[in-house]
Amino acid sequence: MSTPAALATVTATLQHILSDVAPGTDVTTQPPSVARSGNGPQVNIFLYGTYHNPAFSNAPMPGEARSGESAHPPLSLILKYLITAYGDNDDDISGQQLMGQAMSLLHDHPVLGRSDIEGISPDSDLHRQFERIRITPDTLTLDDMSKLWTSFQSAEYRLSTGYEVSVVLIESDRDSKTPLPVLKRGAEDRGPDVMAAPAATLSGIRFPNQKPSAELGDRVTLLGQNLSGDNTSVRFEHPQLAEAIEVSPEPGVSAAEMEVRLPALIDDPGLGARWPAGFYAVSLVIRHPDTPAWTSNSLAMPLSPQITSISPPSAPAGDVILSIECRPRLVAGQKVVLLFGDRSIEPDSSTTPADPTAPTTLVFTVENAIAGINPYVLRLRVDGADSIPVDFSGDTPAFADNQKVTIT
View (tube, rainbow, N blue to C red):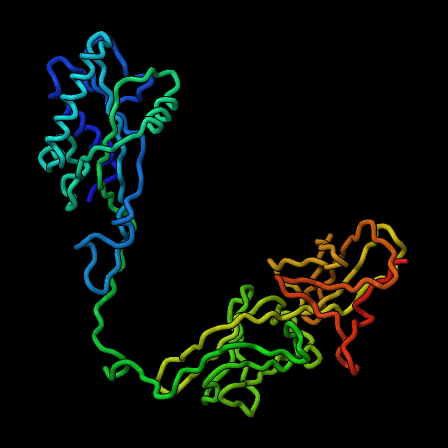
């Protein structure tokens, strides 16, 4: 295949072909706005557009990669040319004769041969391209031609026609991947691992008390098929964690349901640094002796932040500064906003102490807070996961008092 110099090589080859159009004719390759030089007969070739050819964009060229190897597809281009003829002293009849001769030459050269290209620019390697480079007339409507010549600004319209040259393949400079051949399949060449039991598949997640998301300390139920296999653990992956977390399921797993208990802050106050709020990818990991671990499909699980303190709990109408403590602690890169009524407020400051057992403290300014009949229920949104301001301890769920602010 060719180098990036292929575009210039095609233009120079066309110029060479058209040099036989008529004795004394000047063949140029300039924009039409500056192409006309003198008063003699002239043919101008202008490359006005390059377009991708999708036929060669998705696979490497034959011979570029062997079986088991991968190579990158070439840059495949279609070149659009505008051919313009100028008669002697700008005479129309002379220009039309010149255009007819130029079109006849291109008609007799429908393919750019290797000898034509190599004689012009051997360094471009365009002559080594396996795919033929074809020259075909490109029908331009009156509207297309008008738009083209209008874009040339100061140029006056001259008799012109369009041609398309395709395909030009420019080789990719990216290295291909050439792995070593496979000598054996599996340990002692026993072949690929085969699991007789059907694969475990997750289909949904159910949270306690019909909550929309999980909180630390919750028992979360995973729903699916074929979940009752041995040696299974639940994997939690978070964008802000370098390593995934694996938790063993609770006893009593059935084929359709599996319960897993998230660790609770009351048992480990430093847990918030290891379980940040946000969305987790939850999957099952199945391990068997002498075989690689197998992973099921994954589902998204939101882990809600928890507001542990709001100060002050009440304030007069106007600009209100609120200090809020939350767990799990925020980690670097997390986005947090306060949902105050129908407003979304970004924090003025965020402080996460070095002590892993301490919560994150956020300061928000609520501008022009209006007194209402009822207190405002606050929610904290961390990486798309909202805190749950609901108390489920009563007979019916109710908004928790420690998640409210009263504006008087």
